[in-house]
Figure 1 (cartoon, rainbow, N blue to C red):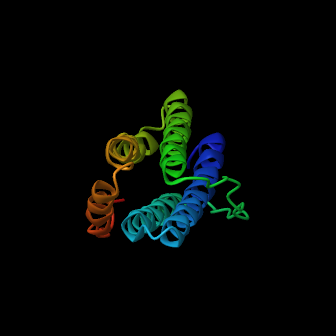
Figure 2 (figure 1 turned 135 degrees about the vertical axis):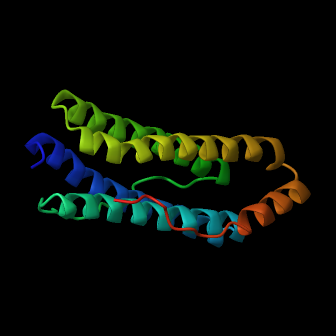
Length: 170
């Protein structure tokens, strides 16, 4: 049986991951509307990954006999004003999610819940990769976004991204 506070945080994370998927779909739609289909593709795949993350948390809770509590998903309230601003918001959001994962890890550590800590290890690593990817997108846009030909090439690069499901074994 998992600690009550850890279960509460895990359930909150389920909903935060679904929100992240919703947010990234909003980003994707923004880029498609701007004619940057590669950027739109990149964030559509991000949305799929976030949904999968939520499903992993759900499966973990279920595997441990805990009830999953789904809440309403808030509408993103981000003002999407420019392609660069969206990328910066994506980085900020990943940093926020990293903090959420660390808080759950800290709660599990404080009650010596090694099983949950082991489960979260994958997410700690994943968040490092997510922050790096988001930061790299911001940097690439700063370097190439002002030149139409370079932006076209970057958009094509992002359009080549394909979805692959996470390989975490529960």
